[in-house]
Amino acid sequence: MNWNGAFPFDSHDMSVLYTREVARYEEQRQRDAQAAAANAALDIYAGIDGTGPYSDRAYEAEFRNSFVQRLYRSWGSEARYYRRGPSLEGVSTPALGIGAYRSVRERYRHKALGPKRIFLAGYSRGGAAVVYAASLLALEGIPVDGLFLFDAVDRQPFNSPLFIPPNVRVCFHARRDPKTGSRLLFGSYATRRTPGASTIYKQQYFFCTHGGMGGTPWGVADPDGYINESNDYLPPGAGGVRRPPASPVDRLASDRTTREILKYTAPGANGALEAYDAYRHFSRTKVTLAQEQAESARVWIWMSTALKVLRQDLAAIPVS
Image (cartoon, rainbow, N blue to C red; front, top):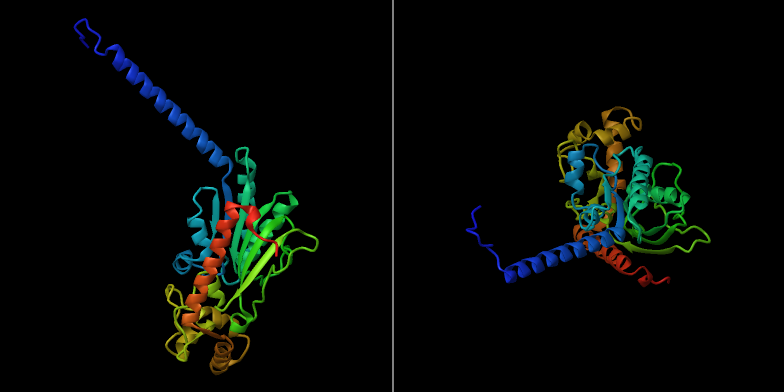
């Protein structure tokens, strides 16, 4: 480049450029320091959802707005973990708990120096899985600052404690009201703290079905307006629309889950139909669609607000 013997910048221009470069460097250094501090204080989240279809595509359609997944999407950092729940047979529940435990432990050990807070959330059998994960963390002396259970159930015995592990500081448990008649055979899980532990346990009942408790409320009901949970078992490809099959023949021909449940209970097609009708009668709830939507929304408000307060100030949760 030919400058014709003259330097193109005077001393004032050089001073301005230098000042700007110093400012940029200082701003970047501050941003890096803030990012490092924020990374050191990142809260760790692990969530496991409830039981659903075997097909991942069908599961995603049905659980896309589940509460556990909504917490995952809104977490605000990459220190998060989410897994779908088990399929109907439920045998993968222990493995799901182990996966969450390994993910949390890895993040906990490799984070920068600073506060490390762990929050776990689970729905239905996923609730049992994260309780199991918490119990594994307890064996290594790793605390869990918040455990959020959406109507946790455990329908398969495995090495997971009946009580909330003692390393859990605060547990919020949203439970379906027994008066709803929803999933009467499911029972409930992790509803008591370990004797002698300092865990703060807070629960609240909601008048909606087990599905509504996890953010997958029903959208259809029987003709009298009450939700019937036998409609949950639909043929592959039905997607997230929960509706009863068109006829008794369709019920047997297309409902693989119910057919497997009933094939040993009554001989012949007529006996199976009678058994299926009895199953439908037993699966009737006392929840209307309006109650389902309203109470499911209340579950989300109660739990998400509790988590927000807990992340802001762990000391803000009262003991009583």
